[in-house]
Image: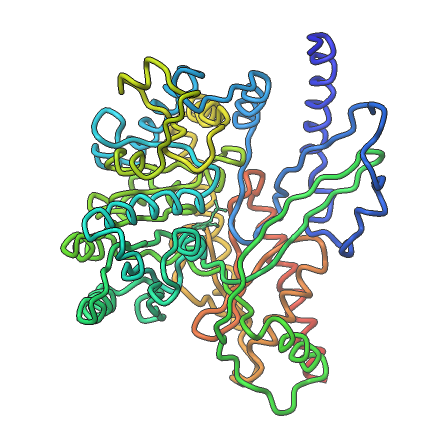
Length: 533
Ligand code: PLP
């Protein structure tokens, strides 16, 4: 690489990104393009000759309130830049002692900020590792738990192993079970409802376990969720940005498909506008419009005790809300994590760290290593053979790995705990403010108690006509998002179509929340007026 070329192009790129953030509010938050639009904008084949620097990066608009946030920051960006610049592939300690040891240290720092039990620190039998995503984190611990269980009960018992989770658990667990060879009928999705604010009831877990034991099955894995995103919905959302002669930027958010019925009641004589929705929904959505849910918090202590007394692995998925636990007032929600065997949180969601950075801690690193390690001749080296070092290749699926701890290290150092706490608290205050706005408008209702920075709400169907409630809110969501001014998403809870307003984009301020609410009120008024014709 030519150092001067790097300097020149990197300056251009930084200018581009800085200008982009300066003008980010001028772009529509939700793309208005049609599928396949990009084919018309870029050539069919890769260029034969080099081109000039035209790439752009993508960031999160302050008007983005959908799903959960995916954060970035200057600190995270600088760490990412450094990582790209150094291009270190530290799969074994020997390939980069700095990458390995910094990751251990930074995850110990973060574990201490979260007040995780000491067993999770690298100074004991446990330790932390950065995975690309929470899905990978859940997969590797499921594999470790499976192999640990099979060691105990015999290799031929795979068909008998049972996994437990709630219907609010992220579909990442289902995928992990598929990959891990868990028999599809042995994946217990336990029902939750509004009586427990959609958290998993220890009684229903205990009952399910005892039923399975009676028929000779082997309970081995429990996944509890802390602040869950139930992603049973399938939506590929491309947020694009077309700028002058720059090529493209996009972000893809994907969620998995649900097959469960949402229980929406059938409508006899809908308003024509709603009739259209019904037709559309029956084709792909009302099989299950799907659900990005409500930040439910499972009771970790009670669930953990049950898991422990049945010799099961207990995993806590705190992908979104884990970040909030750096604030003492939110740490109580993971009381009971002491019982867990593993815990994960996505620093790339709500912790100002650029994607990808999913932190995973385990209490017993040897279980992971026993499940995932390989030791080919070409990777052998003195340090590894002497068992003196951590080789992160044995804690993950791939061999190669990036120097991801740099960006987390930058975030922790450049913000400090105080500012990070302020960041989280500010978003929670903004969500609380939005919740108050919704509560004041009697045409709406807040559906589940807000705990963190997500508000679940809906437009009440006029005359309590619940038959139309789901379609009404679906239509409202479409109307709101088609303005291009804000972007929100939805879920289904207890058969009701719910709107979700998730605060968490780094640039969101009070004015954005107020403006978003104005858009929603305007669209609700217009919709109600149209329907009353
Ligand atoms: N678990 C929870 C609770 C989530 O909210 C999410 C994503 O939103 C995931 C898992 C999956 O995250 P990832 O995309 O990092 O695999």
